Length: 297
Image (cartoon, rainbow, N blue to C red):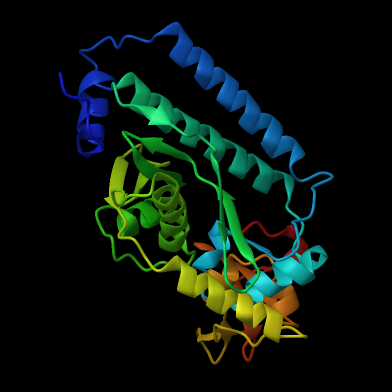
């Protein structure tokens, strides 16, 4: 019998694991491994923010390769202490995201698919004297995957859409892991994939990502980091909001260095979430202002 292929992953999970008419077989070793991995994630989430080791010199992370804002990476490298401190609710949000990701890998195993190389560390040297490092989530049926729990909006943007607007560098991050595996195996490998769950509605998705040129991007980034003795210029401009006011766009709103990058920033609690204003010409009526230290992004 031929081995399952990742192309049938979603169908197999629905048919073999989540169909209410089916009682899935749960091997003890599989559920035991799930428990161990979840325990590691809990410990990591609760301890990684305390006594965290700094990164090694001349190192960028795979998650930074595709980020278009060199200023953000510069802050991460040279002024990490200026990042917004995470609140307890942020830590909890990341924790249940980590647990959901482990759950997706469990579903893949229970559906009969092979899951390997969980948290495998990769390293790619660059001609600039820097190196890229990171840990892939896993491989499913030999395909490099990044497992994501997303909002309904993010899910709809990325599911079955390889050309989704990539403000957070997901494609190049995945391509970095795929390139490292290709070098190690000394042969071409399949396109990597995002394995996703809409955490509000429980919908699963799989989006293949074309290999991107991560080396050129990484070397451009590291040359820029070497070139700037002071903080690089902003990559993103602020945007027109209402009544003459201006606000941060999505990528800047999620950045931990936005207060450092935009002095005088103010935040207001609109119904759909906080809006970060760089310029307030007209005070928002009936919208409470939020102290920036109280914000979760």
